[in-house]
Image (cartoon, rainbow, N blue to C red; front, side, top):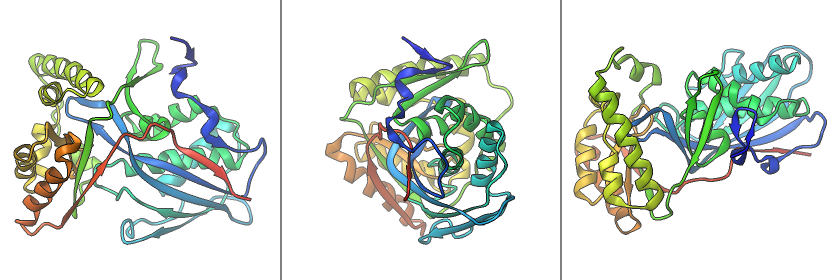
Length: 330
């Protein structure tokens, strides 16, 4: 398989980026939400979902660092602009890598993936910040470079890689410290049911719950489960998916952080899901099902939370195979 730099060539299609070879004043970036880990794929496996966050950017008059933020809708109203905003931090990384001075920006954001729910909202902000900043200065950075910057800003690849490239991605750091991204198949029969509670859980809090060391037995168990899971996702074999959604590295320690999460998981299984896991760091729960039972599974998970007075909703989505899109606005 050919490589373009450090990333698989098949994932680095520039056709989705519609920009002229010069600077621009306005652009729109559409970035998919993601689900990461997917059971045993801790910090290395992630999938882009058919939910998109939209960032409309405008260059502000003057020079220097400034970032104004407006969030449409009820989700994300706690987010603030300013130089310390994650989106603008990512933008500064792109400008620094390109040797360009910071640009004052205004952003209007429409969120389909709410923040702090385990759906890659932070990753989408990082990807949008990098891509938008790059477009604003004439796109001097390659998509490979943007991916490397995104992983550096996020600290791990499982969300930002599919957020930028689309699809189901397995990412590994190889011996010479390059990133190897492997696109993985996701059978059209496999449906993702997201049960999204009206609860927030920060990634930092979820990471603090993890142990510093794991046993060799647990590590081997996860490696074997990941192989089985990828085979099931490729073939659409529900039995393989069920067997592959076994984890010993992170879920055991994170379930206690999600109120009634194990009850929600059990209801998903009783409604016919092949398996149910924590999406990213939670609290959203991801169930993998066939199309025949997807609605019943979603309703069962929401009902389990509602019985404990936790407001929740569900979304049934497929895999989004195309990458983040940047478009210049005239």
